[in-house]
Length: 441
Ligand SMILES: Nc1ncnc2c1ncn2[C@@H]1O[C@H](COP(=O)(O)OP(=O)(O)OP(=O)(O)O)[C@@H](O)[C@H]1O
Ligand SMILES: [Mg+2]
Picture: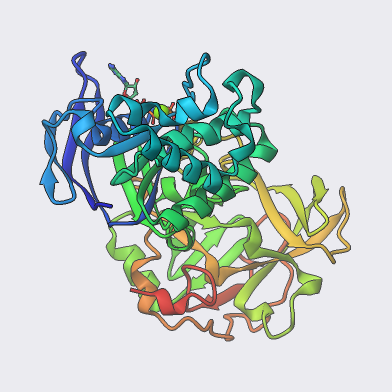
């Protein structure tokens, strides 16, 4: 087992392209770290540098305390599992799994013992004498993992190992990988472009964009406290909704209605030098059918009217889609880039807002409905830098103040935001989800 440290790691390919730019990450002994990001952001390049399959242009890589920049892959005590399992077709499962040990001149009885043990862990015992052609995709993937396990390496590196599997098998194998890592307790670095996989698997998730590390944190932290617009839009499905906001005298005007900012958040936003135009982020689950919100809770949010274009019932939840003007002043280019980078169509960049409601809602498609949004969970971003301005004010009192400017927090907003008719809700605590106050740094 080993700790892996990447210090100022940079990769520039001979053609001049900068694939990884000043990457810093400490991976603890036994930790399960996920590298996630859109296609081409440098995940595989980073992993290949750890494995020794790709030269490091500059920076220092240490495994178990030793600088390994110039060590060949076989001297790094690391096992890699690729997307293509690359099994030897003419060998049985047993021979495939034991091949690396055979090359290392390990005695046959030891090889057999190790292969049997790995097969037991991976539930492959009954397939040991079959050839890969006669296995399912999931079984082949397990053989590929078995080949890595028998070597008992200091760390496992996995590059999208599940992407050849169908959706159901992916979920099943994902759980197996997670269980396997816990059982073996071996350091694991796992690459995926799938943010759901990233959130469900890792102890910590490192989000990359165009060769640059954006944020490293636990799945919950990434979700609740994204440091910038990119992480906020990339993590979470359906994606966070973004809309324009304009600051005016401590009020935040949006197409859903107007909010009064806490003094602290107001100072934070004003001192950021970002000007009066900001981007407001609200996750689908921050919305609710107002009929299902208790009277106690209503003052913590904003009630507005929306015409429901589409309603999807998933049994456990209901998703409703409605449109809002993106608003003047929103940096659409940044949002479009975000959508492109994250390779998603549902990045909340259009005018469509997605809200997740309780299954008990009576709202129906094509209807005008009254919705409520929890403004305590709102994020505010600087449109120029993308920085999340609402994080710094986290020390703020999280309990939302009930007082409202007009004294009628429950008043319904007109469908098109009319600043004069809008209700101002005083929100003291803004960022993050309710109930994570203990995590504030
Ligand atoms: N040999 C090479 N020469 C020049 N550029 C390269 C080379 N290999 C990769 N790149 C570039 O480096 C960047 C990062 O590539 P990398 O394979 O690490 O991306 P990735 O995050 O793994 O993407 P994916 O999710 O598609 O696998 C890309 O822009 C890619 O085009
Ligand atoms: Mg890749």
